[in-house]
Image 1 (cartoon, rainbow over the protein chains, first blue to last red):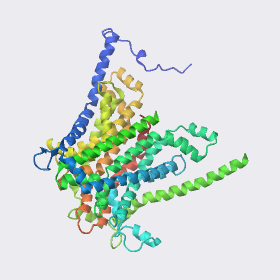
Image 2: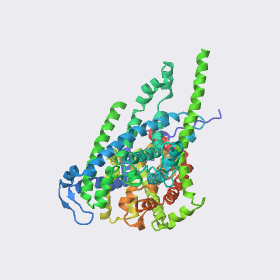
Image 3: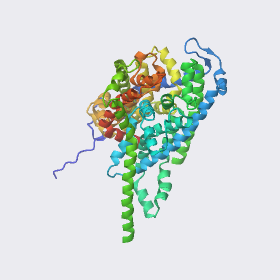
Image 4: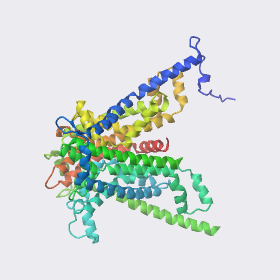
Length: 320
Length: 276
């Protein structure tokens, strides 16, 4: 035979040990300890960054929330004044309500739209690459830029939307979408977020869809399941981990909404689209009260951590 | 039997038309804003031209060259720093056992659970203590930190997917640990590196909230801050056309990079997300 079998590259077929090497057992242990040291060294930069720019600020924000902490000047302990102030803040209460409302709307709409897109482009067929790219492309535009884009797009001055709708006869005269009424301002922001994030969410859902083995569908078809049954009984349950991830990303992102309202609606009209993070910003850099901003941050942080922990537990229980 | 097949074909045919019509209509909807902003940025009172870009760069509170340079510096530092730290970290988590490994990995992922908008106030104070107030380096360090969960996760998966034999044969050949990493492992995890780098660039180039909080002086503004400032600083009328020019100016590098690397980006993304 002319074909030579290459020996498998494992340690056993390696060159014979030199005689000066220590006995295998001790050698192995020392090697393992050395390897652990090398591994720890490689992980050191990550550890430093996580400690310095994540754990320390996490502790600091809690500590700050117990202090009167002006932007300029010395802090002084004043617990729990920053927390008791929260309940009385009228703007904060309306911002919290608005943020929750926005989060529910975005989570439902974005999920439905993105899932629809994912189902549309899940199979390899002609044109699918173009469609996926088209849906995902808005992600290449920064979110702040996208907000400015929609500010122009929806404006009376240069935007085509009002003209288009007027031609169809749906509106007459000027419509100020981003600042005319609370509802149209909210709708503008929702439209912007759907446009910007639907493709990204679609991509995550696609990875989940593709992780379902084809023979499961085949079996369902053999059993005579129709499309709705297949989707309801097979796709949805097997997609649960991915769906949980997407829901977590969407709710967290929406609860922390800032750019879209800061840029597109300026929080108006009459503070009707002021989000929680905008209130934090206002406390810190307009009212120059970092302690109060930290207090709101800690409450928001606690809500998010509890919320995510619940979602993770649900995810784990269902997927195991 | 034949009847079933015939209806099957017919359903498939109409479904295919439905697919094309829906897909095309949606693609137009998604692409329209991008095309429109490019169009609006070159449309002038008299026709078409670059006057809007001219105003973008020359008006009193428009973009200056240093804003663009600031953006380039922040992006370069963030991409470089993220790649460096996530590669070493991913290698450590993917290939080594050491005390505290799992805790550190979980802590890194936990950054995702604590979105930075809530701790940015503390980071502002902390960077002041470190002498990094109003500094591009400080901003980059913060941006790197918040890239880490995704990047380290991604690189760990990439390193885990490399066959162990490859590394072992390098070691038998007398490669040092660093030599193995640079010469053998890095080429093997290239798709992961591209994805991590691209993501770090897209985020740092267009990030708005962190620079808004961490940078105070207009000298230090990034391009995004400067463009948004044209909107928020104007109390009277907004120069929408110049804003759209700014949007296009910000988006073009991202779109070019995206087009150049889309294939490996999507591949890296999917392989990372499916595993683990």
